[in-house]
Length: 181
Image (cartoon, rainbow, N blue to C red; front, side):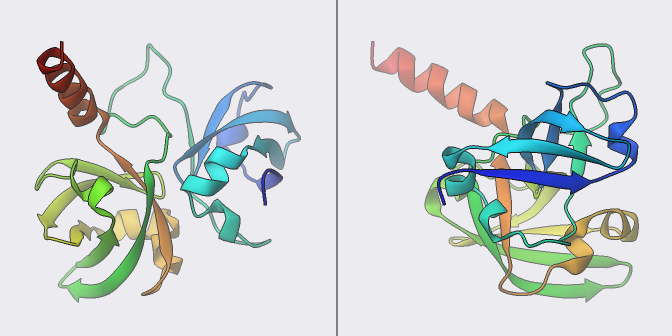
């Protein structure tokens, strides 16, 4: 599949939406091309399908939705852009008192930019990394986050979209770029 058009049922994110607005769908920044009071439509290009799990979505799948932060808005989380770096696969889901631990297998390219206590987005959910291993990283989810996101539907073996913290990528680019001059 080289491209797609998706229509997504929604409520909250459609308040004051306009054609051309960005809405992240499972962490993938998409542009609203049309909308009604109950849904919106967006084009999905080949690059987005290639780098994400969106190609696996089925009619009726629950997705995480988030509008772009306005420049005058409150910054209440990590810096995320909706530009997915790749995917990972859930390896384990373990309850720990009121929390749920998710262990995610990811490629070396993704893991390179992950640091313990740094940030990562999983399906667009901005989270704090709790552990980093050779082929995996882990996050711990509180009940509120679980109940408000599609993580509650995820199972071992499911693919998830991953976006690294962009600050680390910029720092590397500046440092390596200067060394190569």
